[in-house]
Length: 125
Image (cartoon, rainbow, N blue to C red; front, side, top):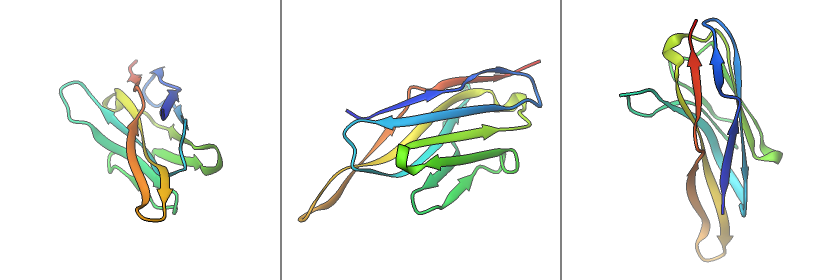
């Protein structure tokens, strides 16, 4: 019922910029955290950047100073502005969200994790 829809992937030259966007939709109460992961061929999926509703932001060391994550909490969207792209940034990028589906007085918040379908980012000359 909850979907994360991504856009913005593509081919870019080294040193170029690209912006990824992700929008969560469906029967959601709120979203605790949204972020971006990536997975290159033969590599494990790794966290790129994340942002909580409380404002905590984390970046992988490899992208600090180059990537910027931002959220529009009211619209359940998250974006990743990628500058000074390198060939090593080539990967499938996945949007991730920690979603509160509902709340009850007896159990509190019920959370679930959702993933986008992934979008290919290729950095090549």
